[in-house]
Length: 108
Image (cartoon, rainbow, N blue to C red; front, side, top):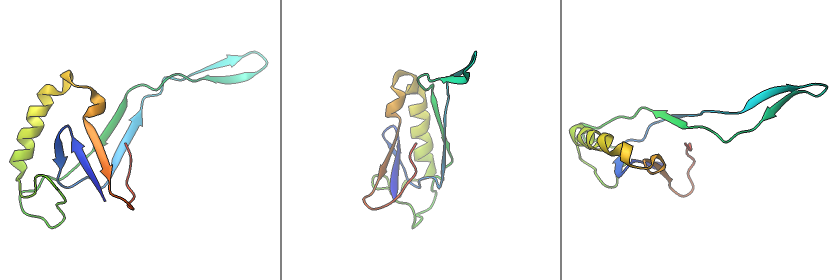
């Protein structure tokens, strides 16, 4: 099992899957007599995409430890508030995934 946070808000029902795309900035050149060579550069921005469900009922699979029983409107209001503060924050602080001991999970 894992817990997922967007900024300070715990996602009550974590997504079943996530997609991570890292923008590569590597270059390939042709060297005479050597063939094609890769020039490795630092990675570009990482895009993480996922879909998640916001509860409007008390689902038994709602694993929120902080906001159990909150309705979808609460989460939408929090996301809207956070959306306006994102440009002023470091992007590495926005998404956190915490895995419980002994379980497997995907990593962004």
